[in-house]
Amino acid sequence: MIVWDEITRPKEGQYAFRLIKNMPYGNWSWFKDSENRVGISLEVQSASIDTNFKPSKYFLISTLNLGGMGNILTVVCQDKEFYEVFEVLCRDLVDASKEASVLDEAIALLEARLVLWTELLRGLKGATRQEVYGLAAELSFLNIWLDKQENKNLDIWVGPNGKSQDFISMSGLNAIEIKASSNDLVSVKISSMDQLDFAGDLVLAVFPVSAANDQSMNQINLEFLISSVEGKLPSNQIDNFKKKLAMTGIHLNKAANDFYFSVGEPKYYEVRSGFPRIIRANIATEIFNCSYDISLTSLSEFATSQINAISRLSK
Image (cartoon, rainbow, N blue to C red; front, side):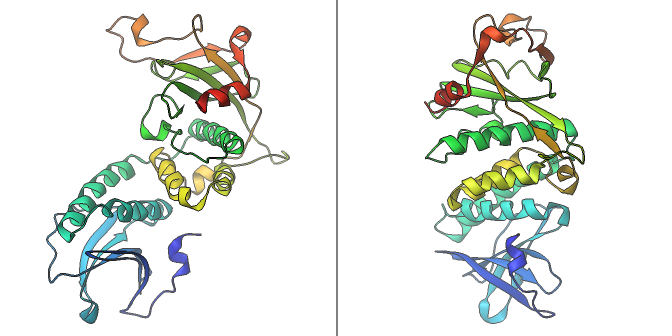
């Protein structure tokens, strides 16, 4: 359920608020108007607000004067297609502004953060089946990781943050790259020279993912996997998880959740000396980008266990 679903739509010309956080310069609240537009509002303890917000097709920033309440700054969702991501954005804005002690500082932080979110939302795209399977493999490993850890730490999931590997240990010495493969685990596609290029110990985890037909007993979708991960996280980690999902660049809408699939038991391989891979240090500098397929049928000498892979990542 989205947070605004719990706020009753106000009468015509009125607004509804639900307090999020008290700050020295004003109060943050969830916001809904009589036209069912939603967002967040900042009750400003000032006669005027000096802002430099750039227009965006994703959200509208404006100032309202509510008489006895004074001025409020509102950030309102412009495109319902981004409704669920918008809640993540709003929580992030409130969190970013907590470092400010005065209004001008808070406004500056908000302006910078909204520029980043505009770029992120612009990059969101409809998901292909292959992208859905790739994210499904990452979420499947995240479920395994959370099952094995007392400390439910999401910081190791760094793929959404732009790192070349999907999971890197807190020490930075161990990493796991996650891949989805066909159900027979014959081969796997490596999409760049950087994915198997890591200075420390690297493990390649390959999850068999295949389309599920209507008769499949264990068919799932991304919504199921996301719910499963959230169910294992403490409440203070949910927002961080949603933010990481948004940062994957995949628009998790109905179309993405219409892909149903099954995920099998993964295979793990140590990427060490002799492992077949293409990395930048081994090829001409004129070649700046490439992708390639690796046959998995002859990699038995590199095989390792899930226990070993998890143990490394915990270090």
